[in-house]
Amino acid sequence: MSTGSPGSPGAGRRCAILGDVTDDVLPCPRCGGDLASETYYGPCTACRDALRAAYAGEAREVEVVAYEPKMNVTPNAVALKDD
Image 1: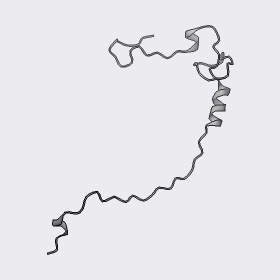
Image 2: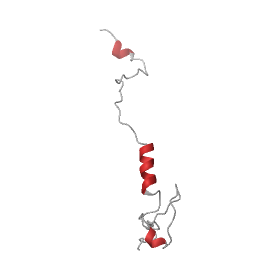
Image 3: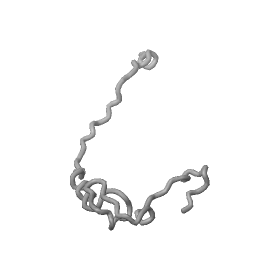
Image 4: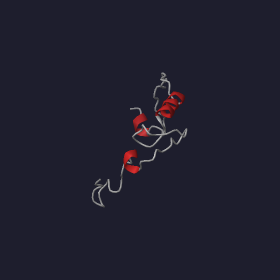
């Protein structure tokens, strides 16, 4: 696998595919089950589904307050001068 020249932006970065790393079956870091059917290391399919269900966000309408600019400075005297 080529990682480019030493000064290139992607130098030294690699993605570990389980088949390339080891022939042993690694455990799921969350439940300890086998990751034999997984391509990448991480939570197993069942754990990913449980995490999605537990932390699923619900869509809701958010009411936005109308923008009102605040007055940080007083108007200058020339602009307020009556003719």
